[in-house]
Every structure is written in C-alpha cells, then in structure tokens.
Image (tube, rainbow, N blue to C red; front, side, top):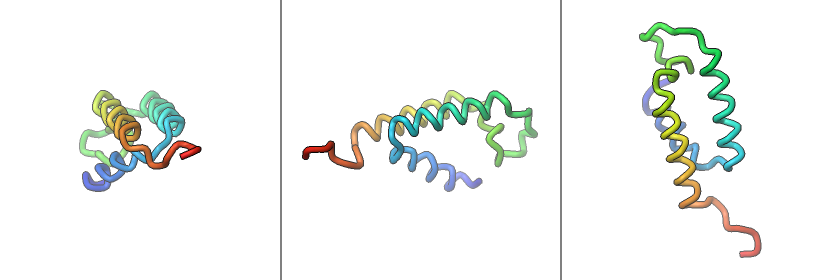
Length: 78
C-alpha cells in the first residue's frame, strides 16, 4: 500500500459510525495480537503497524473527533 493510499484510508475513517470505529478497533487489535514478526522491508502487511500502534490509536481518535465535529447527517427531527 502506498502512503497516499494509506492516508486516504485514514481520512475515510471519519465517515464511520462510532460502532463501526469500535468494530474496526477490535478487528485491528486482534490482527495485531496475532501478527507474526515481519521483515522490516515488508511495509504492506498489517503486522508492520504493530510498531506504530500508538500512532494508529491517535489516527482513530482523530477520526472520531472529526466525525463528532462534522457529522455526516443531521439528527432525526431536523
């Protein structure tokens, strides 16, 4: 995955609902927990992110904040 593709994926997280974000977090945590050690030159696998788990947490937190600040739809009744 290229850096541009990764950045696009991170930006698209703002469109997820809070429950979808929690589900994504659970799935990523599971993949990180079972990821085999990878060659550092292999940056295309999810295992490569285990060294950047804090950064990934920050990216998800940022996406949640953006979603709260800019909801993609109006609450019902408006």
